[in-house]
Every structure is written in structure tokens, then in C-alpha cells.
Image (tube, rainbow, N blue to C red; front, side, top):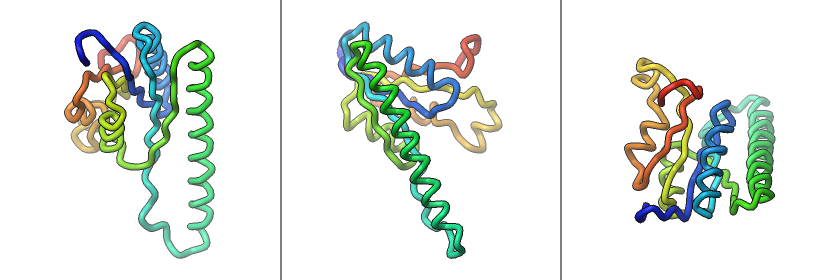
Length: 154
């Protein structure tokens, strides 16, 4: 972030309960700074192998329907923000969540990332990892973390 100028903000949307608050915070910042707001959803990468049985075609159709639905929902959120006068764009990218989030933040040259925390415990983070922690470690700009619950610290 250059001084107090915030030109571009990236908000990570995962369609979880905290995502609504992520978009609310990011849109408030975009309004306050007259910044561009990018809503990004990172979809799971295409599976390398889905098997040979008749099921794989069904898996592919289900994945395509899911991606179309997520894209529609993301576009609708961006449109609602544009109706409020916010310069918002929706991006749906498939791949590894942390890697793609950081890659897009650099490509778009964002000044801040807004991301939600799901409030998992230490054991979960030790075994599975944390998208929020990985984003904080790899980001080249400030990362604002929205806690899973309003009364919880991130």
C-alpha cells in the first residue's frame, strides 16, 4: 500500500458464512477509497484422475454445474456492488487456493487482500494448514482477516 492510497482490493470469497462479512468489509474499503474491488473465488483444481467407471462423466458434469453456479453467484455479488456505485469485478480461478490467491494479487497489483478466517483450532492448522496463514506469509501487501464469528479474534 503506497501511503494511504488504496487503488485495488482483492476479496477472497469461498461462499462460507464468513464470506458475506469479507465482502462487506472489502466493499466498505472500496467505497471509502474509491478503489477497484476484485471478488475472487478459487475453485478446486480439476482432478487428475476420476476413474474409468461410468461415474467420471457424472463427476465432470457435476463439477461443471458447480463452477457455473459459483460463477453466477460471484457475478451477482459483483453486480450488486456495481449497483451501489462500487467498481467491482468477479474472478473465478481454479487451482491451489493459496498459490492462486497470491498469484492473482500480484497480477492485479492489489494494495490489500481481505480474507476470512474459519476459526479452526491448532490441530487442524497443524495437519491441514490454513489458507489465511499461507496468504499472510506469502502476500506482498497488507492482508485484512475477518474472523469466523464477529465476537472472535482471527
